[in-house]
Image 1 (cartoon, rainbow, N blue to C red):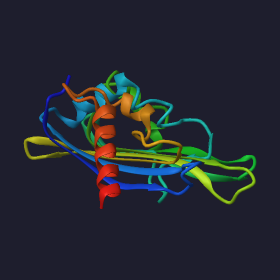
Image 2 (tube, rainbow, N blue to C red):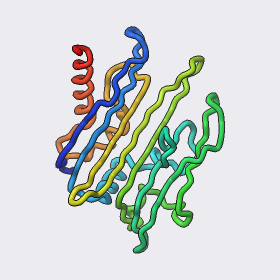
Image 3 (cartoon, rainbow, N blue to C red):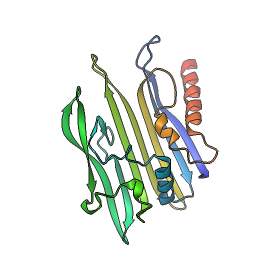
Length: 215
């Protein structure tokens, strides 16, 4: 388990866009975590936990799933491969489609010579990972109404001096209750000693909502 040097949780948005009888919450949470372990060590741990996997960094065509709402890649990193520093990216190329059948995205890997090497396998391949980031934006079109439910996850990991700085942003819309967004991702972030991320986020959401109610 990884010891945390400093952490912070902020609720950026907690709004009910539905009604009191049929709530539809959008919850946006930011987390900052500083640790001593290297970016490469964290990358290995998150590969073991499933956060870095073919589910989050696809190598096959996917529907209604891209890197981010503002078109960031699924994944990018500065890596050391065969003694050479390289920039590695998995981008999402829009190949068309429709809201009914699904909008298709083809993962494209750069550089070309590494296109068969998935980030989850970097440790076994002897590839060192330095600064890296992962972006997932999944959306689900709701039939008969002009809106969609979405889930957004972003993590940036950078070495700054003696610490590795982790920046997380999680957003989920269309929630029927006030709860931690993106629980699938939160479970796969559970590599930190004494820090249950899902529980801590829920506490902040509850506290923020009470403050909102009392003005």
